[in-house]
Length: 131
Image (cartoon, rainbow, N blue to C red):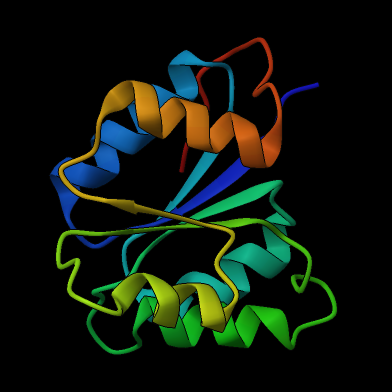
């Protein structure tokens, strides 16, 4: 079964990299560039996994994760947090907000795919769909 993944990422290059990797592994991907649109997109998609940038304009990824954890439709959705600004204590702060995995950028492609599949299982066979 094809897994649905929502990527919340404001950096176009990172967004395309994540999307292309996931689609190559058979996932159905929805992309969100503006954090203000993230919760409605997740509520509409009901994804099997969310990949969340932490450093976002308007609403931080940490705050979005907290918002997901109090939403009955999203509270159990696995979240993989990704950030380029990994400072001391960041991982524990992100995990305390409710992230299930934490990956720092630049990402290792193999580690990224392993982390995704550990959270969502096999991504599926498939066509390339994105929005």
